[in-house]
Length: 162
Image 1 (cartoon, rainbow, N blue to C red):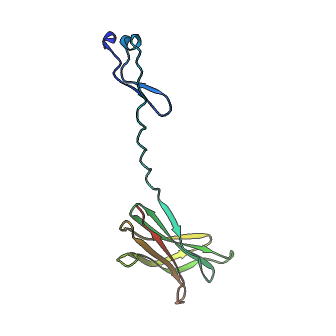
Image 2 (cartoon, rainbow, N blue to C red):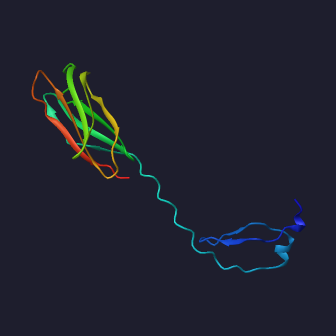
Image 3 (cartoon, rainbow, N blue to C red):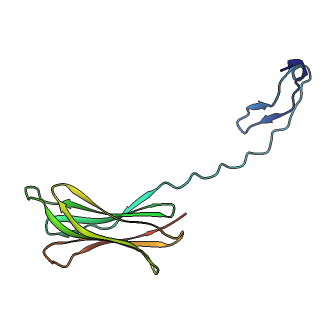
């Protein structure tokens, strides 16, 4: 690079008062120039919304507290149930679970059913994963059945905002 040929081609002032020089050479030092501050830089784009998880109310069933949770990340929706043993000292056992989701006023996003063994502490049951339309509301539910008892369900409605 031939330094003697460099000239000041651009001087930009930032909102913080710092200058940015595009090219600097002897000519730039010999010829002082005053540049007006540039217009304010455009605002940076807002960062993408992070995934958010919303859980419904807990419902009690014998020795367990159950709740449904929905994680929304853009238009991706994941549903799961959580079941926590309330009293210690009891052994675990198998339950029939039902985790479902749908767009309010629209189509089903899926349903997962089956048998799960739940012991002490909190157990998680995976539910449907789907894509929901931007601006819609997703309704999800989770229930466990014990010995044919009508299951109370935890239900939550979550907006899909994009």
